[in-house]
Image (spheres, rainbow, N blue to C red):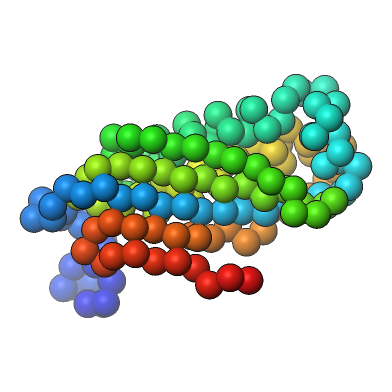
Length: 159
């Protein structure tokens, strides 16, 4: 169990003690894909769904989720997020790409906050569109990049 820092010597779960770490600027970027019918994606882009502006609501949900990650994931530290953004792109006629970037000056990273932001934004899209497209899927939630802290920078390989 020594390779996992969320477990003590006896294997019991614990919150990592970050008190000896320096506060540094830490940035994490994550992404997710929501696959849906081209008709559904067209409705989203044109604002034609009865529930309203799907992307505006999903953006707010993602930002709110980043701020609440410590309440959702048991061993995450509650963090004072300095900045969070959620952006959308349309790689194909059937895919919505969601990307979140979270910034903080702290003793621990914000990877989980960025991953939570894209996850909740994607689930919000699903919730708002499920009445017109029940076969949507949320796919490929992943960390794209991170910087800051002892472990340095990370960049996911291109797909």
